[in-house]
Amino acid sequence: MHVPTLMLLNITMSAVVGIALMMTTLRRHRELSLLAAGLGAHALGYSLLSLRGQISDILSIVVANTLLSITPALLTFAIYQFQRRPAPRLLIWAPVVAIAVSFSWYLDDFQARVLLSGVLFSLQLVMILVPMMARQRETVGRGQYVAMFGFLMALAAMVVRVHFLLGVTVHHRSICSISPLRTA
Image (cartoon, rainbow, N blue to C red; front, side, top):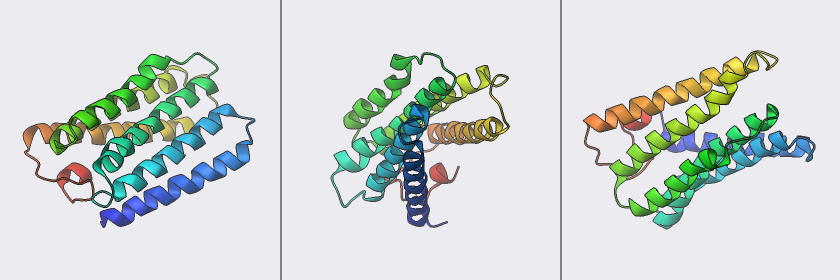
């Protein structure tokens, strides 16, 4: 598969769905506004990643990955709001801060960044799944199971990626390079 084309598709879908959600919520449903903002952050993050080598590393690595980590944080907040219960703010935002700080620190170490992102994004996926699974009996509809399955698949991909990385030396410097780390 052509990675730049997949990234463009990801950016387009995130932007279109985010704009549609934002336009339909009209500030009546805060949790949907959070989802729309998360999709906007996702689209912008992947846009910056796709410009790697054409813009500064701070923007294409640090800011892009920070935006990508904001996406699951906002999704987690939205889930807690849907469930009408308080969100553990510090726990939710800690991985976002960790991504921003660690990616700045390891700007020139691709392998460390891949390992850190795998671990921190896995943690964020678990933080999405925990409230969903805790209240699955109270949540109406089957859509929650589709969403949980998707998050579990993403979590499995992250775990495989980290496991693979721990046993392999990586010599890539860009997310657009083709390697088993991105196809796992």
